[in-house]
Picture (tube, rainbow, N blue to C red):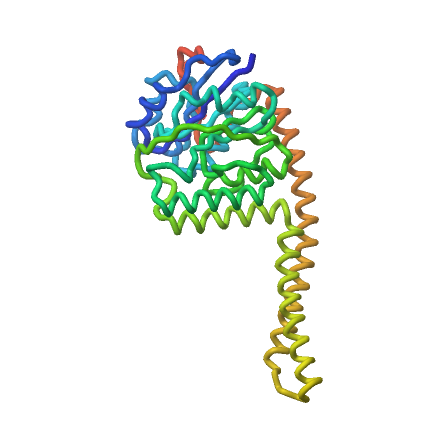
Length: 338
């Protein structure tokens, strides 16, 4: 039967961690082994020490804050190297109900999904403001359109991955992994499912300081990842719009000059020529970007093979810079620093 590792990215969560760890399941039907992995993202409190006292099996620690996306990626890498067949990611603030973990991994156990996202029902969450509900629903709609998936809660961090999905996802964003991994999963033809989960308000989010800041970062992330996987569509759409507008302006200039004689309108002609030139250049950039995307696909295939080789060779979790520690009673040795 499969091995499940529940990973918890943490930043100064010494107070919340006992409740979060205490709520995690110790046994699940269909799962042979359950272990807990804490990623201490440069905490300045005693998060790592609290995790050890609580009996967490594995800790990956960064000496300084790297950000949620980096912590998430480090957790996936460590969990794979620790032999996980299924990886569940949850938040350290205990906002997600751990009793929903069996339902979250059920589609993976049934072999119908590679990735499962917990659906909090963001449009009806009581602890979300009306504005945040609207933004969550609209944002999830945009992600569904970009990724080709049907995930109703794109911002949910409560999700499960099988080994296949964890090996193939490469988070390049420095902000958050939630949107990017869904778009990647859709573009890489991974089977993505969603299940309803319960969520509670425990404290204000630490990921962003304001809604405009979050929207800006999310928009940049979506545009970046979509352009990475659909460069022809992005650049040709932009280029086509500019060429079309330039063509309309140029046609307007010719029409006025043919019907009414010289009318001036030199500014329209200059603008039309500029738009057409820039539009053609943008279309050519799309061709170049598509060639680069082909090389990226080859690079990702090489990275996948390297990861598989590392796993076959028994490579330990790589936390450079930082270190990986196991409880002495679990690892059979004193904690080591690398």
